[in-house]
Amino acid sequence: ADELVGDYKRVILPYGRTKQEFWSMFKIINDEIDVKGKEIYIDITHGFRAILLLVSTVANLFSKVKGAKVKGLFYGMFEAKDENGRTPVVDLLPIIELNNWIEGFTLFKNYADGDFLAELIENNLSKLSLEERKKVSKLASVPKLLKKYSQAVGFTAVNFIPKFTVQVSDVIKGLQEFPEEFSAVDLLKDAFEEAYIELKEESAEAWRKQYKVTKWLFNKRRYSQATIALEECIFTYVLENIGFDPLDKVRERLGSAFGEDKKVHKFFSKELNDLFSSIQDLRNKTGHAFMKKDAAESHIKDAIDRLSEYIEEAYDILNCETDHIKDKEALIDYLNKLKNVKAEE
Image (cartoon, rainbow, N blue to C red; front, side, top):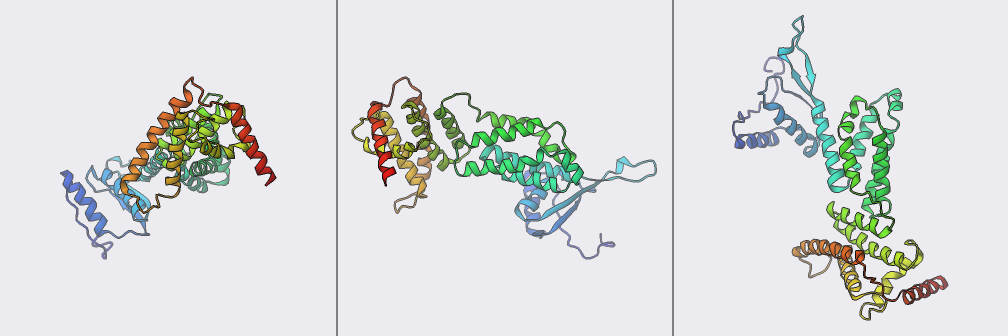
């Protein structure tokens, strides 16, 4: 390097014999090497055997934290010389790329975010020739579906989330061959299917499907969305049980019906009334971003704990044999009157 490069920065790392030395390595690399916004080529030919593990992590640090682009990760295989004594130099970049795919799938599986995976697929598709793209035309539809899926989750579109998950699952299951650039999709194929099983619901009752989406959103740490979905699940339960289509316009009047019935319990049982009132209070608090003078940090954790309790309580109430709609005829009459008043307005 002194002879061929001349002007370079020498950064000395410890051997990495202890846990502390490995952390010291990361700190030195982070502090001493300026890679922000740069294209990086890494050569580990003369590194210790454990250096590859270190470098793959450092490469992630460069790209994810520092905003650099790792363009190559090279290793000269001295022991693999050919008959003419030439040493092959291999690019180990697929190791970094696989980490990206795993990260994308982790975001998708744990947080219901499909955008990162969509971008990975789009970027790899853009590198293919027109002829190669024709061979993976089905895969080309996946980014759009993943984005629709993420948008549906972001806006708590409870009826669309399962629909888009099934569409993505069907496309990926239908792919028989994967180009080299998409080998990771093939490796994660079964994991995709497992993720989609979470939302499969065979029940004909719409409220049960929405309840499953509610629990799913909660498990994805989408607490505000889960609160919205839980309230809508109860609305759907009520409409189904009084013979209305869950998407009938009277749905807009159910909040008023619960408010009217909060203390008299003419339409609904006390249990259902109290539960809905608690969920509505929580939804109002989260919907207004905890923007109150008396808001405290502890209120956030308390809201999560209460939401978990409400989700379990909702299933116990909605699933039991007791009919929690006390006077269906009176409720139908009330909703229809409100519907007519709104129409006249």
